[in-house]
Length: 90
Image 1 (cartoon, rainbow, N blue to C red):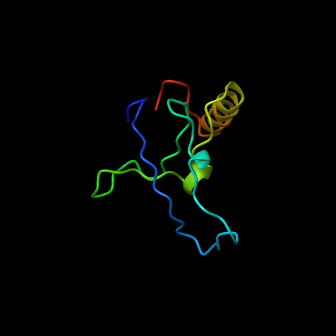
Image 2: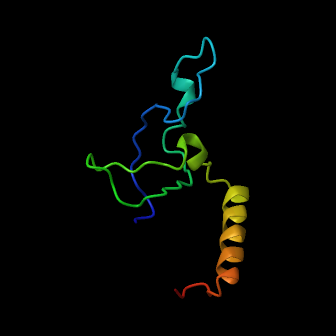
């Protein structure tokens, strides 16, 4: 997958969760234009509509802050070490 991908937002909930009473979509719920995010895509095969789905909606797209990137890199390094893999080798 490329490092940079265009993102379109659709709002839906595939769980049985109920929306809070009085909740409405407003523009302030959208990320700022040109902001950077870490996108977790559990199935890297696009849908028939050529879309990818993030892991559990907004939980699958944390903001790309230095802190979040460092945390994810540390988790990835731990898992690779546990799997007996070295960085850059499969």
